[in-house]
Amino acid sequence: MEANRHDVKVAIFFCRQLDPDQDTTRRLLEKELGPRIRFFPLPCSGRIDPLHFLKALETGSDKVFLIACPEGACRYGQGNLRAKKRLGYARGLIEEIGLAPESFELIHAAGPLPVSIDTLSRQLLGLGPGGSPAIREVPGSPAIREVPGSPSIREKKGETVAVRHE
Image 1 (spheres, rainbow, N blue to C red):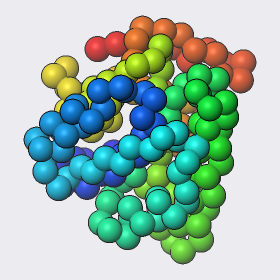
Image 2 (tube, rainbow, N blue to C red; image 1 turned 60 degrees about the vertical axis):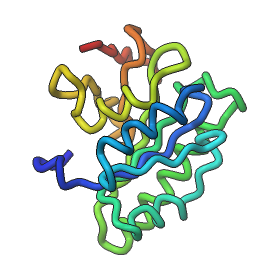
Image 3 (cartoon, rainbow, N blue to C red; image 1 turned 135 degrees about the vertical axis):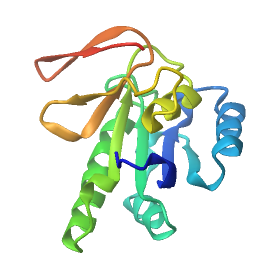
Image 4 (tube, rainbow, N blue to C red; image 1 turned 135 degrees about the horizontal axis):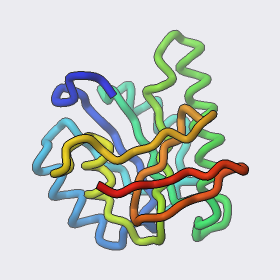
């Protein structure tokens, strides 16, 4: 992300199925960071609409994350796959008008569910106690990153993606 992380405003859309305690944990982080961060829980990441991404940019967010379940682990079947397509569409729209498509990013939580939205958010923003976040780019997919929820190794289209803990 940008060098000056303290001035970046972030919107985080996420699937409620990731963290049953998301209501209390995200509110603590919102209280801690104030207007720099806004959370938008969704019943499923597949319910996101490209207009949600655009509205987040319009209202002042510099970066918009969508945190989805690991591929193949969606409670509703293909929600995270739909989310990926919708994010791609939204990226295309902002690229056409000259904005950076990197403003939108899809994150697949790794490991077994549930995972803490607080922990994932802190890792994305580099706020964890260990310093830099343990996030790994997925080769060939600049809009998808793996965020550790547990020590695991995932297979993705024939490539092994190692996920590490801090």
